[in-house]
Image 1: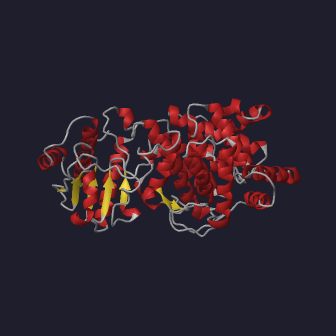
Image 2: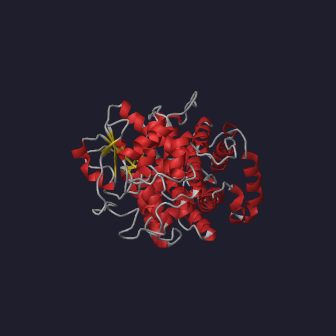
Image 3: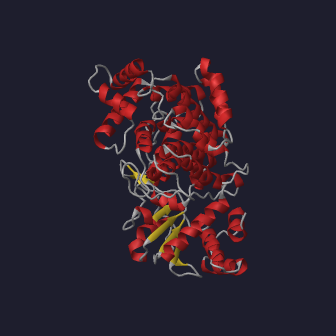
Length: 481
């Protein structure tokens, strides 16, 4: 599987977008919506650390860790593993649990049968007893289902419903999960936002109603959908947040606008923003998620942004393949020489290759910016904290579609470098061979410092004579999109 095609970027954005939306909404759950922009300040009902995700992403990761093995999520074997993961999470990792989910998981423990049969039976019993089991707890965790069978929409729908019904027996909960998972599959494979794409996959007697509900939410004010703990209004609030902030230009900034709108919807802010974030991430990709969020986002079971990307891409690929990215231990190559050259404008920015990752102590750097694919053991580099080693999604392919948000990403890298330098850190910037992505970022950084593009180009070429200084990447770095 190629490492950096656009569909892989989008798949990588599903869990990352969800987790960022979750962490962004955490401080405002069941509280007053933010005045101005929402920030990942922590607190909330947990309470949570700044940037920490809640039960929305935690339960999604229970599903994702099974999906990443390549199992069919609708199979009894996979559902058993998901059910056992939910039970283990409740016993040892849950920071916040929905009332319905807790009731089902607790009741299931005393029932006979296989793990998934116990959960499903408890779920159905609760529905038979109360008739009210359409909370948003199923919808919030089925995003990864949308990338588990990207070539088969029927299999996607079947898996979404099966995972939802483990705890939520109401057909509305299953239908909402089917609609959102199919929308994610479409966004990843086709690059468009279409929540109505799955209407033929929902319960036939409810298809017309769902069409009306989607139309009602399209372009609406997200806060109009009150009581968004209900799966229908949670879906509507998330879709309203996405569609009301869509300017139709394909800009990566839509992801940020949409998540801010989702949080401002109020009430169950972390869940609505998590749901919205999964679809926005599927449409715009990991490359659209800003640095300040990726630096902060983290949570149970000890994961950070890189781990979310590994799970999502492995799921998209049909399961992990030994010795291949994204699950490979290291992407280093002893045949690639190290560079560690000082930036001609700012010598505390060192320009290098992937081989310089093993020299961070020797180079005396306190932060690392990686512009190429890394292995699980490559990040964080030795001596770095997770917040001080950041990855960026840039392809060396000169086709525009391979870097759909190139100007945004270059701005984001440059901003990260300036932030690290403001913190007093010496920084290593590297790609794989140091011939294209590293010098392009060095050029953008110099231009953003106020150096004239022509002077910056001459300086970078002089400092790095082996670079490839042509093509779209170099042009956008110097002059913008």
